[in-house]
Image 1 (tube, one colour):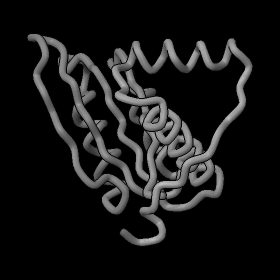
Image 2: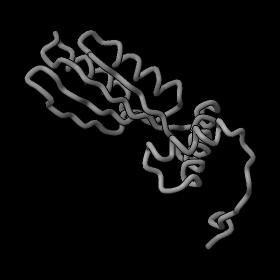
Image 3: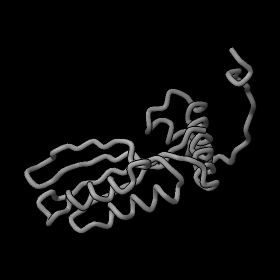
Length: 137
């Protein structure tokens, strides 16, 4: 193993209420260990910091929309084609006769990602939208 792969053990002191919170969350979410739970919290903090620094990041926009809504599909495609360098791929799924789910992967600065996501999310006919933020850290 390389130096960066070496496991380091350290102890942490917590108030009982914080420890109980972690124990309950570990059990509820199915983590196999407290260590992996804490590692994921730290990784999330690293992603958050990268977004704050305006570095190149990734966003996954998940939207549920009524595909019968007036020209909504065309408007979404137009926005995506206007950002060809940012929109890297999409996944489209038919949910019901009226509803579709679309997943759009967006790459770029956090401001660019949020701007594209807001334009698509704000279209009439979009029933639900959520942006998941991530980055290579």
